[in-house]
Image 1: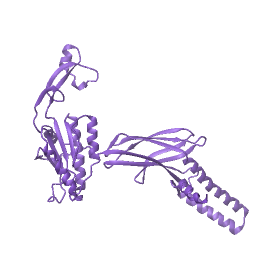
Image 2: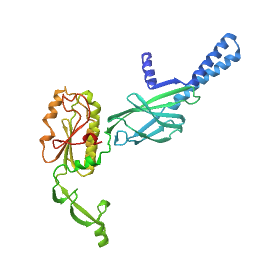
Image 3: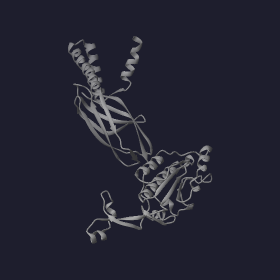
Image 4: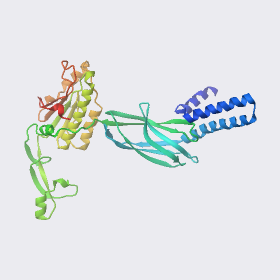
Length: 372
């Protein structure tokens, strides 16, 4: 039985940490001085005062420990984040103690071993009560944001010690690349790239296909006001689908370390192009290195493409397997769609990173360096 004691105490205190505040340092020095005076003088009053101060230190540790015990946390995250775009996160804190409240709680998110201060404070959490806290979460880099738990801190009751405990709460969220505003002139040329023929069927386009009565759920922007005014009935217009509104967006991932910042710009620009094309009704396919998505459109498909870009990683040009895998499935091998390539590295002769290179159907786009 004795050999189990260290393991028990290790489990009890592995998530605990105690720091002394500036007031606590002064109090401890004063306590030490009173203790020395009691020993040197033998005065009972000093012994009484010294015992009282030691009891305050002990009480501070015990009360703080009970404030931090038996808490429960639940975090509600959005489906995804965008770089540098704030999103609201909610944290539910619950006191599972049956009769002891918790006081002066400060909560931090823990990610990669770092405590992230969110300004979350609860002055009092009654037994069995819960508190809903909301705060903005801003991610500064794309990829997978891993939140490992919640760190709770209190200085109750006397502010002498800052006691912390860690509650594991593993969660991950995908951070999509930043969407930047694009130059409208350059964007207009991008939208008109390729043939502009249409086929006689309903879909996204500019030419009129049919007029019909308004139905619940129709887009109010498609209301045909001249006909509505003439017939006194809400009428919407349907447009002909354009058979060439298909695009393949390709992001090569091979680039040296010196082009890392430019590669991140290429990822952001690719995400912006994909977003704008999706908003204009294009059927999109994304090729990132050797990975390829299916053709599709709509919000769910767009989200899949954004997540694909969020998780892509730059590959060194010395990785021959990556080079071969990328060349085997080059998007230029496919026909029937506008092909857009965003390159951050042009090859071994490109030794100094300058600007991105954008090609549409094999031709370099003029002014691509000012696209974003």
